[in-house]
Length: 213
Image (cartoon, rainbow, N blue to C red):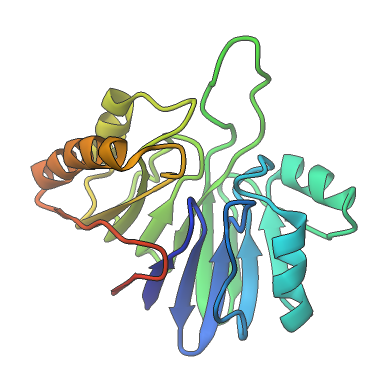
């Protein structure tokens, strides 16, 4: 299995020639290879994770691909004539050759004045976990974690605690378009420390770079 990071929080998981696209949002420039997509997973409805135009681009090449997300995503996507299969915490979906397990229910709090929306995390093949915009830990061993490092809702100490709780064997930073180069370095150093406490390795990926599992 291969995990490739793209801009901000978009990732593509590849296995046996099939792909899962995660959170194709407005910061995504393009996917250089979008064939063979079995499913699209959208963790929540915010534009940096859900771009109707990017979803349509993927579906145009893969009309049979299934789209998964929480109820909030389904409601937002319906307005764009995109059909989403609603998933929630505890669901397990088989999308050959992948197994998807879903965790959590809500987005991390940004501010008391801003409504808390639906959010789900996804564990793929009991190996790779991404929680979307939340600190929901799956509660099972994780080989690779996509760890958020910058966001209006993110405090670096809380992100460190999240990595410490998950204790992955490997981790890489995502949700990084809100940070400067210096900010990415500072936050990355903190998450690198947190990953190391569990005996794991932290690796920074630029858009288009991958980790093989």
